[in-house]
Length: 421
Image (cartoon, rainbow, N blue to C red; front, side, top):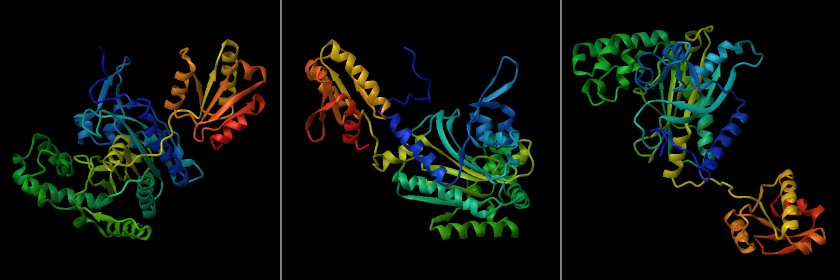
């Protein structure tokens, strides 16, 4: 028997409704914040992620699904959504749109080759937002607020924001020089990856999981000590906006995120009690990314969250989403002519905006009523020879048990009323 590849999973009926609920909630909150949906290809030229995400990141070095196509081009299944969105922004000249900044969101599959665990799969679904074109620190706070509001409306509790600033290019360079000076005398104690990153990108050493317990990690220079006046002022304004919105946060100078494109604001939203996977959202500002993928020097900020981790957090906190399953109406026809009419009425009920179904297995009346119960039908429409002769149907309200004969031409309105439409 052929099974799904490791790190992937089928999302079946009964579970997919939870995904749809979360995705619909994300779309609704983006509508309220004036973010428009964008859909980019599932695979891109490998160079996009090498330049955008960063060649020294774990994602690029170890986790990408890269292949050569029949035209001898190197392509990669997208490991994250920001680089693709920014590429589309540049390619489609969105910087010329009248409404600025350009505010976009996406919901789609991403792919990373890593060890599968709860809430972390090799194929996963990511919801993310990107706001490109504004230097205003208020939009940094807006993206954080959008994520927090979505979580709150889903019912999640025990959340907090971890916040840091990675500064501008000047601040980052000063911090980089300090990191090189700090790690160089003892770099032989670190893993091969850290040794190779010392010269290329020492900030990535702080993100290493293998050497996380090394004493030098604890005493490493922190970026907040190297922020210039402009970067420090910017960070203070972001914090002030969050304070004004009533969003609590913890300044964490060790938060660096796993992608190279971040500048200034970096943040993660943490959920207590989710187990080993505690980060359920991450994002930040990326003022140099648009230029790195071939555009003009434009600022941007965004975040991404895995739907799988949201579901895990909901499960951990015992939160049940108000999912409507089954159908609103079940139609039963007894006898060949009544069965034919039932099929016709079924189509009319669906055209009237009702979810409806009937038996297609040739079962008896009792078995069909049980099927209606399993489908949680609010109304059952029954047509026999007598009803057919009177051009009417017997309609049972499953909540009250009340039965009433209803003419065919009034059937849709009657069932809609039972179903609260």
